[in-house]
Amino acid sequence: MSDNNDRRPRRDDDNTNDPTIDFGDEFGVVRFADEDDSGPALSFSGGDTEQLPHWTEPPTGEIPRFLKDPTGGQARPVDETKAADSTSVWSAYRDESPSAGTRRPPVDLTGGSSRRFDTTSPPPVQRPRREGRIVIGTDPTGETRRPAPRDPSTAQRRRPTQVTRAPRQEGRTGTGPRPVPGRDLPTATAVGALMAAAFIAATVWRPAAVMVIVVAAVGLAAFEFLTQSESAGYRPATVVGVVGAVAAPLAAYWIGDAALPLVFAFAFLATAVTFIAADGVESAPLPNTAITMMPLIWVGLLGSYAALILRFSTFGGSYENTGTDTFFILVIGVIAHDIVAFFAGRSAGRTPLRAWISPNKTVEGLIGGIVGTFIAVIAVGMQSTTWDDPSEWIMLAIVISIFAPLGDLAESMFKRNLNIKDFGSVLKGHGGALDRFDSLLFAMPAVYYLTLVIQPWS
Image (cartoon, rainbow, N blue to C red; front, side, top):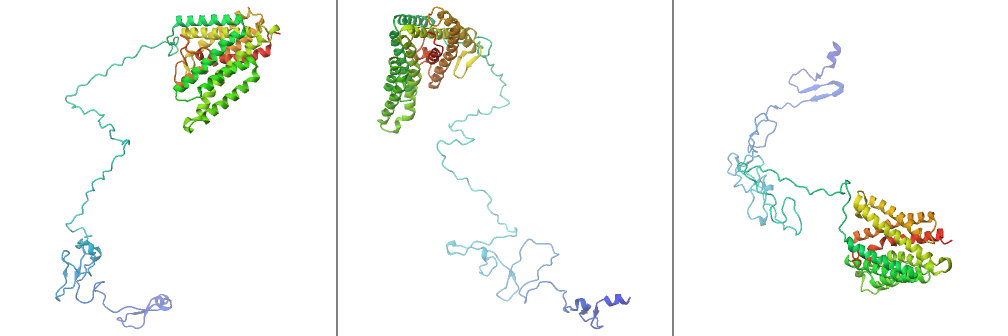
């Protein structure tokens, strides 16, 4: 008990009114104020203000503001509409600048005032509409595309119009032969027979006569290509292209394949000089030079292999008929391929060979053309004194069967790119010279080098 009593705080004396309490060595002596603190916690000096409401009273929602009455009476509330004292607590919210003219009334933060702020949004800013700009939700044509709503009470339900489909064409779904554009077969047959007669007569006469036909065909084909290129928007050097294409087979027949690099070098130089002399870069020298060189390579260079084949017959001796026989078998094999492929594709074609190039060329037509090539090469080879071995016939037929359809596809591809149907119309029923001899252009280089390898004259 003595210990507990020692721990209690002791007063310095027994007087109960003494506000001093001794807490011992730990806290020392604490003296409390002896004033009466039962009054309000906050007070204002003098009698100029009223007592603030106790915190337990309900809020009134207003901020009390009092000023001293200059007459010496009791304090009174401030009238907001008449207060002009710059010492007012609301002076910070007033616009007292000289440019303002009148003072702005104070802002009531209590929510008790009858004033209300204008909460309506300002009208949207009208901006000029940009020309050519399509705004989603508007009709750029100025006309409404949506039909007016109909009254449900008077609207009648209409049955949809029945859609009628066109009759299905055979060959489009692989169930029948593919349709082939109409061709004047009697005219095409007559023109083909006339060309075949002229070619056979020239072959029997002499190789130089065949060269006349070759040069005429090459020059006409180059001219057709350059003319169609001009229609497509190009501006090639037409004269340089035609002259260079014709000069290639002539130089090859006269000198040989060693003359071809010189011909094409001069042709390129002449084309470049032509565009150097132009007024400016607006002449588009790069694409137009390329389009000028196109017939030089495609028609002139590949066509010069006809001259190289025919040149075999100018060597004399055992080569006397080598050139004409080889070229004759080549031409007959290509013609047989084209004719049989045409009729086979027309009657039984179902599978497109390359639909994006030509939807009318089919795998079935290609197979028929290969069969026709083998039959024609073997039949003519049996009459030849140069190609007299069956293995040589087979190799020759294989080469023609590979490169002839490639030449046809390449020509169709270029026509599709130029968006034309034919390169010309000089040969009735066949189109132009390039349309007729496209397969031959690809097959001639392959047959020439095959002849050099197997040497059928030995």
